[in-house]
Length: 198
Image (cartoon, rainbow, N blue to C red; front, side):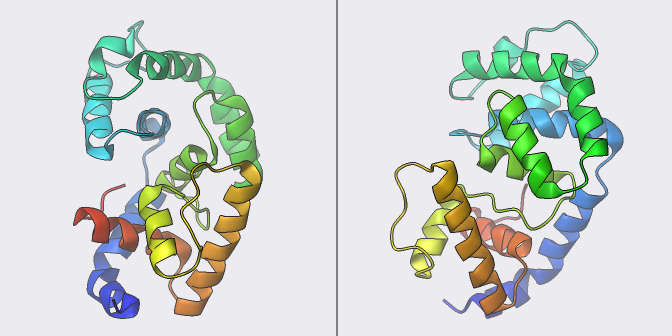
């Protein structure tokens, strides 16, 4: 597969999607945070459906238990608890989003302070609200990095050390092919799913 040819074909839509992320509305940030709590081991489309329901119900401002609205989401009981906890902490999270300027430092803080976030989820959230140059190492990405011999094998689990190692290799590969890491991420995603989503 010629990665640069594929990139040229999808470049416009990929750049447009990243522009959308950088223009995310202030009110949407809370729901992007929630979306990224629902995505692990569940379909992004299904997670988004659930978030749209919670948004209509005004979950952010109303006393709603989200558990019964998480249809089709794996580990929905745990994830419902994560949503409730993140909502309670949201004013602190919001404060950190404003005060921590460095993306890596902000990601570290989110991983330590938002229950349900590992490095993948925190990177996903930050990318979806306009941050750049963080790797979202989900199975689509790992599969493609393996296919292009960037990594020798797909790890069974990702320790923090392993995450950073692969992220560095991904960044190096992105320089070699001359495609920014965030655009490569969406390119790999679109090859796997047939569309550029989030």
